[in-house]
Amino acid sequence: MNLAMKSKVNVYILTGFLGSGKSTLLARLLANEKAQGNKVGVIMNELGEISIDSSIVPGDAPLKELLGGCICCSIQGELSLQLSQMLGEYELDSIYIEATGAAHPMEIIHACSHPTFSYKVHIQAVISMVDAKQWSERATLKPKVTKLIEDQVKYADVLIINKIDKVDPSGWQGIEKDVATLNPKAYILPTQYASVDPNFLQGVSHKGKTVDGYTPAHVQHSLHLRTFSRELEGPVDRLRFESWMKNLPGTIYRGKGFLQLTESPGLFSYQFAYGESMFVPFQSERPIQPVIVIIGEDLEHERMEKELRELQQLRSVDQYRY
Image (cartoon, rainbow, N blue to C red; front, side, top):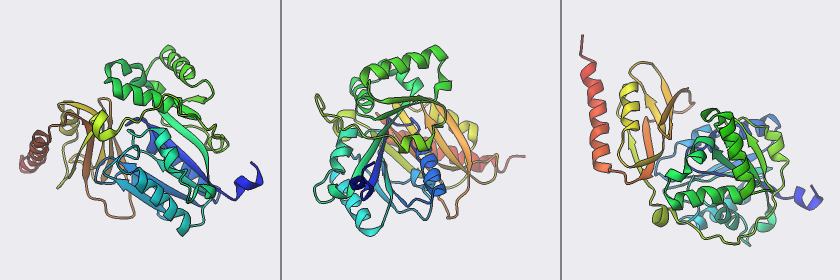
């Protein structure tokens, strides 16, 4: 890296469709930065009105959140503003931008290139997560969703094929060939649980992709993604909740939140993607309200509200059974 670059703040852009593993990767990268004694800031974008993923950011790391919209459309200007403010308020070595799964990499790059602060930042790398199972089944997705996922591959410097344990070896090797055809210059890293060498990612250099053939797919109009966010009043039965998520109407791309379960004490981080649920014990230094956020298309809000309320009422009835 030349001397001019050393005076700039490195910006890492994390992209990938909903549920591909961006937050898991970010947690690994932040832990590595902290171990090296680096000062980092984080900008996170979530489609819903309730922040979930920010819980992985260390308390001493500057954090700015963009809620209720997608960087690729309604709040691109706000990203530029938040980035400018972070650069003015803190002395940082790096800034990580985790975009919502509906964001297009080129829109984020444009937001990071605003003339008022572009001389202060260096886009170090665009890192895109590819969910192996989702990629292998992308023919079942709507065309505009498929195009967005493919564009997230085309404009990346590093492609992490995540969750390869969900497909057979010949399957993920075929995926590797697919993404290499779309983006022959990118580094390709097959893995599970976003387990990659952070030091390698920090050494990658952004190649400055062109925008030939690029047309933005605005989340609120073209993709028709919607969110359902609700705070929960108490514990829910794990199996009933898992069954409810799996059988929701519409197309559910992502579910996440924090839950209390009737079977176990404490708080659990909840993740749902492509029909599979995961509950992980979670500890936090600050109080966290149990909450669920669901992202998808054709969501039936009234029905979901009613059924979620019934799930919690079932829990109350079970308390008094002998």
